[in-house]
Length: 406
Image: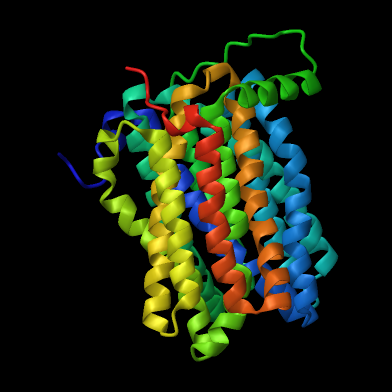
């Protein structure tokens, strides 16, 4: 049995190799900009409130465009959608760089560009997820899920660190230009892909609204899909205490430990991605998702109770590892159970689920912490995560028993 991450798919499958490399580079650039944007806004305004509003303003349009993007991905040529959206995202990075060259960069322009790029990302991600299903054989879906975990983990660790270094040594303009350059690389990789078919439309006369409704109805009809969405949503709302990290850092030495708290879950996920070969031999995918999410909640409980920094980082890394395991099997289940002609719309629904959960989780964690204290917020969230996952398994037995068909 091979216990390590299998990179051979990138060589065996030329199209997926180009897609993976291009998207890996562009996502690394996105994570670099994720540091540059709040840094620049705070530098210009000295207001944490305005920095906080950036995330909310970026989320709102994405909730709408993710659904529209799903319909587009199921109707139009997915590679063309990626080429168009990534071109717009690259232009957005250039505009951020141009605005930053001014002696007094305009904060409203920064917000406008960031909102536009977030909205376009809602059109981009469903096309990416659904095209992956097109170019990869069903037997390789578990490997794809593990590679995705590796991609996101590395980028989430390296991107912010690289962004900080570029900002400190070369300035904010260069930082945005580096992000723009990553999109050029991704566009080149997309152009190198060949023989990507246009999706076969199953409903020529449906309106956009009816197409979205059809995707939602399909998802609601499949317990195994509902289970993956609910388990992840519950885990993110109750077991994601990132909003409390600044307060927690104060008890562990101040700002110098804050970055460690943020990066620890991604480190755990990266470790899991390297030793993810075992996941291809697991048959009970629904149970794997649920058990991993439950262990995520237990890890968060232990994190909330610990009084030592090294233990806190260990349990955060452990929670990230279990979240990665859950993510590997969720992604595999989505690719295995969703028909190609619906994959884009369901990818839009998935996008809303995993993006809104953490935002609501920040609100929940902050509110409970304000009422009962930081420790009570973290521990209660972990407990509710475990209870919520158990309830999903009880009420959605097809999710718990799900095994892929041969």
